[in-house]
Image (cartoon, rainbow, N blue to C red):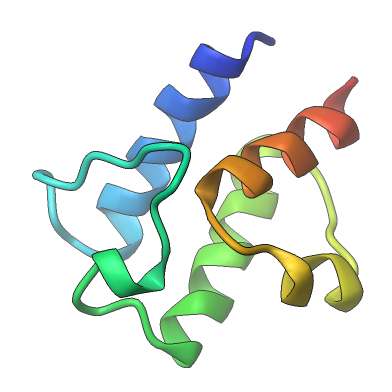
Amino acid sequence: MSREEVFAKLNAVFCDVFDDEDIVIGEATTAEDIEDWDSLEHITLVAAVEAEFGVKFSMGQVVTLKNVGEMVDLILSKIA
């Protein structure tokens, strides 16, 4: 799966989790950029991403993510 394909699927997950079809994520997108992205929604988002891509993240991996680009890198490393 290409980086662009991961971004496309991930963007759909973000739209679904945050119930906002206008969300467009990018490499540098963070919780600061999405209004409803708080700690509770972060857990929901991570679970939805794991389900969508068929991967599991450790807590250590999740807490070190700084932006969506790093999440894409992590997803790509898990599905490779």
